[in-house]
Length: 208
Ligand code: PRP
Ligand code: URA
Image (tube, rainbow, N blue to C red):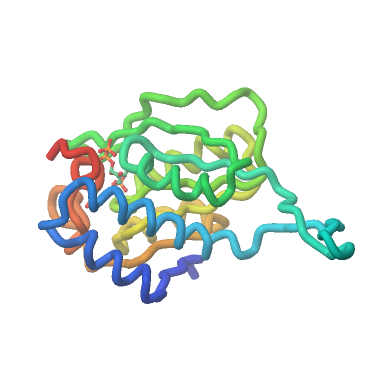
């Protein structure tokens, strides 16, 4: 059974509708990607470990909690970039490790072009950030890279998934939960999610 979490939060669903709209221009599109990423990461991090700490208020000592696990945000370039900043503001001590992949338009296979991960892993939990889980090739390749690096816990946080991408990612890596705002109908014959939102990179960066 795939470990898929589709948010039915009204704020997320409202923003997703605006994001899909072909009339939404890049500035608004980027703001929506940022806002949705924060809300989805909030849901995806509900099970992070904390350790009890004591904090002194102006009046007395109180019980508090510290996040225990170092977190890595792993945006897949380019489109995942728009999901980083907002989440990073919510967890400023997170490390950001970029992975550069693009889909070959003919084969739809991911081609790696940027990876500066150090030799040993520096984080315990990795959140892969990419708006679109289409064939799943880019997500599987990124999890492969992170597991080779030694990452112990990995989660995928995206905006829209195709059933094909969910099947591919959860078959290859059943231990990686998938958090998205929607699972759409299908892929078209050039690998785009339908109805989807078009090209997430082009719509953010105004390059379409
Ligand atoms: C898009 C998207 C994902 C990938 C998903 O990136 O951001 O990384 O496609 O497709 P897949 O599940 O079939 O691998 P794209 O290759 O368009 O590159 P870009 O983000 O640089 O525009
Ligand atoms: N990448 C995108 O940006 N959009 C899709 O629908 C599929 C892959």
